[in-house]
Length: 240
Image 1 (cartoon, rainbow, N blue to C red):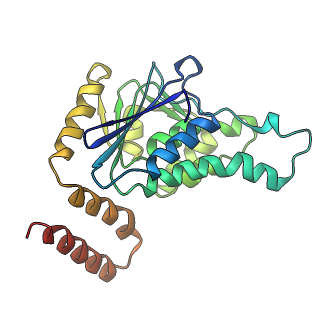
Image 2 (image 1 turned 30 degrees about the vertical axis):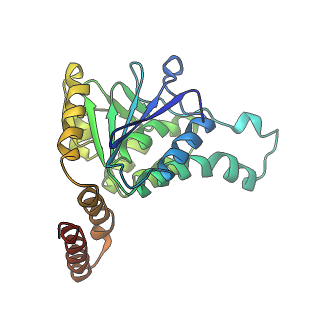
C-alpha cells in the first residue's frame, strides 16, 4: 500500500484517490502497485470504481525509475523496471469488470493523461488540460500510446504525441479523450450524480455493458450480435 493513494470502499463504490498534490500527484511505483492490487481484489458487490485526485491537478506524470538503474542498464532491465509497471496499471484499469469513472481537474500529463483517459468514463472540469509531452525529452511515449490506442482515433493520438501541445477540456472531448465536461465548481457534484445514476443498476447489468463495450468493437458484426444476445440473456436471467 502507498501512503500517497487512499483506497476506500463506499457502499458499492471503490474510491481511489491520488494524494500527492505537492508533486502534482505524479505516480510512484508504490502508488501504481497499490492501485493494481485494489483493482484486482474487488468483489462481486462492487458496482463501479471512481478514480480522483487531491489538489489542483489530476496527475502530472510519474517519477521515472531510470536514475536508480545504474549507469548502463540493459534493455531488459529498463523493460522490467520502467515499461512494465505502468503498462500493468493501464491494463488493470481496462480489465476491471465494472465501469471506472475518472474525475479530472487541472493537468493530466503523460502517464496522468493515460491514467485518466483509459477509464471507461472521464468527467472533467472545464479547466482541465491533457498532454503527452514526452517527445520534448526525445522519449517515444509508446507506453501512454498503448493505453490510449483503443480509446482515441490514431490521428488524434499522433497529433498529441508529435505536436506535444496540451488539449483543453473542450478539445479533449471532441477528440474522444473525455466523456463529459462541466464547470470546475460543479465537477464533484457532476461525478457524484453520474455515479448515483449508475448505482441504480445491478452489478450484473453494469458488468455486461462494460464487457460489450470492451469486446464488441473489435468483433465481426455477427459475432457482436451473438455476444450481445448472450450478455442480455445472462443479465435478464437473474431476475427470474
